[in-house]
Length: 193
Image (tube, rainbow, N blue to C red; front, top):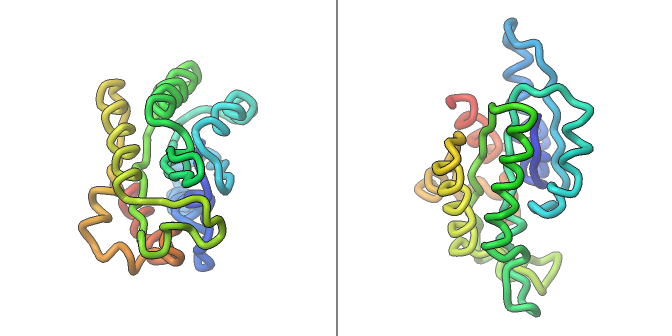
């Protein structure tokens, strides 16, 4: 079971439909894997939207493993409001609430860290000049997820820290979303875990 935003939805990966679909294809190829994989990504979603739909989405699906990849849209900076889309303290509450709700169904939870952005293309974002993504905000929200996962004893894959050390800009199609190469890199990190 999966919950996330447009990056996990698979935007801009015409080869295999994003890292979540690549993970599904990998799991489907294993003879010992019989569970369903659900990609519940919605473009533009944040933790508040996910909390609104969590119970309804989880209710009709079998448990097994929750993989959460959410937060980059929370870190988005709204220029006219001079603040992040979801303030960091509210984001922290939302992540803790997601963990709490997931644990009522199953204890197998994994959080995927956020991806860095190419600020030359995301400050502001071309499709909405009132919003921007900056690595200082993305890193802060990524670190908050990491901190919560450590205290809650939840698995976490720190995509941001590893990807920022690479030529990550070459893996982003529009400065925000990974291209096919980026989605493959992310999927490979998750498969290794």
